Image (tube, rainbow over all chains, first blue to last red; front, side, top):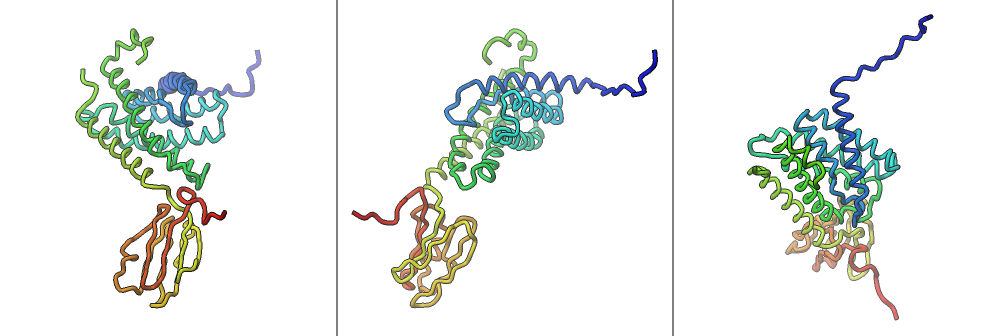
Length: 184
Length: 122
């Protein structure tokens, strides 16, 4: 049998790639759950996918968390049909701002600061990034910033709940298998 | 198992404080988008707050200097003796006004959030 003149293209898949893919898939599922929950105001969402991002951050570091977050924004937009639509850019700017804050917040001493100290600033940064983009580009001049307090309150609540879920999962890593079917 | 550590309470408190500040700011009134300048009882100029500029308004005592910067306006200089309108500082909310009575110059922030009309006629 003659060999192909073209060298087979091999893209090595590392263990980290698999890990990111697995975590991103989890985050993606939660993104769809988020999207399915009716919301009184566009943009006010629980942000369950960030639970996975925070777990990735705590267990594997910022780089993995950033990959998981960005992959889920991209893949989520493809599944929801918002790729390159305003919603996609809002999600991207929110995720970017949130990752930037996480890069700083993760330096907080673990002894005194738990996951809630990561998720609340990240959630606030998320809406901050979204509002900045919405105010500067999508709806300049409109009263987008007037909604900031409502978004901040939602982020505070969502960030607290997600942080507590992460704290619980970190504290009971083996209980996850049994409690996976319970609403966290 | 405690899910919240001491620092977490501090972070939550800060977050709540930030949210409360945002609410206080939002309830403080709508931001205006135009500045109405009166001189001697007549409208001297109506100009958007989005354009940074300095306007010289002449009055009986001299020139009042109105400054518009970053969506806010103030009386930067006034020949009046008490300087009340200068000390009022920056105005940005609908309905806020500064009156320089001696020089008969006044500025008032207008916008869609407050009085959406100039006058009513029947």
